[in-house]
Amino acid sequence: MTVDVKENSSPDELLEGFKTRYQKILDENKSLSNKIRDNETTALKLLGAIETLEYLYPHTPEAKTEEAPGTPASVE
Image (tube, helix red, strand yellow):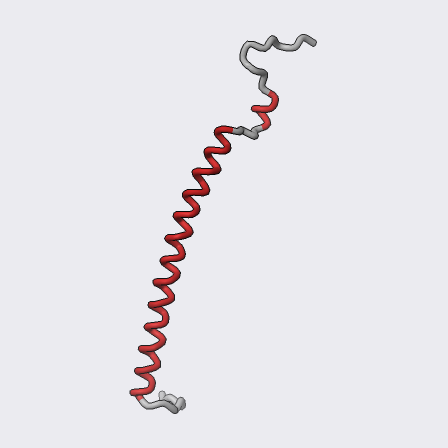
């Protein structure tokens, strides 16, 4: 089986192009890795803030309907 594709670039040009693309991919991966690390840090800080606020100011439906300790139960 023969291949009918003809190359328009020399092997040196192909090699240089591949090296350039490879380096761009490595640089992009490094940049994305740094971005992920920054996002994870920010996410942990936000999670801490969310948990703190939820602890200090609970917004659950049960918390709104619960009676305070020592409050007499209503009689129907």
